[in-house]
Image (cartoon, rainbow, N blue to C red; front, side):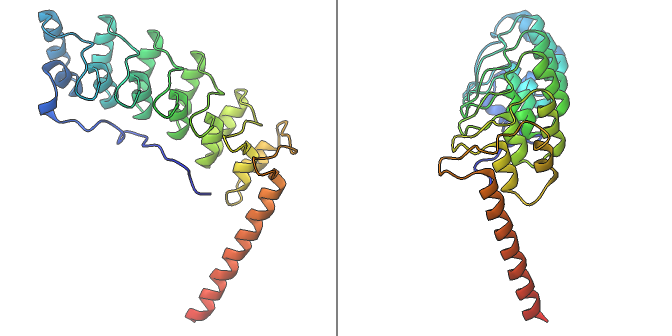
Length: 249
């Protein structure tokens, strides 16, 4: 199944940082220089909530680059936890996107809002689903993250995990009470999305739950019709492959 959108997730999802665009406090936070950050805060010449050219705080940079000591220092000094960058991403969203679990944990334990959304209406839990990180997802749910939150495509974290074809993450969300009949903005249910892919164990997993097989998408198609179309396309691809093999002999 072709993805409608994609996430940049993992430790390579950090910010593009140019030193010339950063103030002293931002730069120190971005490289994890705790002593320098502490010194600058004591001088009180820079506000720890100052924004750079793309609306990032020092906390954003420390979270994205994985410096929990800097994060702890800023949090203990009562910095604002929920300011948003140019993409409407909070430090928590950025920490989860960049797989910086320790930084995310510190923020959650100090009251960061886990239900804020970015410019595409993705919550931190969407990024955990995309990054295939059950540990972070579990911590987010412990802090009352909405498991049914929908992004602009109408994807809940469960639906997003299905598009990533990650059985373990799908299983995790279902065991934590995710709605198995959730649908995207085209009214495609979890089962419809799953059967649109090449055959996987996710379909069998979904069918263990209370799936409503009568659901229809915006075109009136059911999951059964999706399955039939997928099987026909798989058969067609196999036929074309075999024909190509014969010609090359």
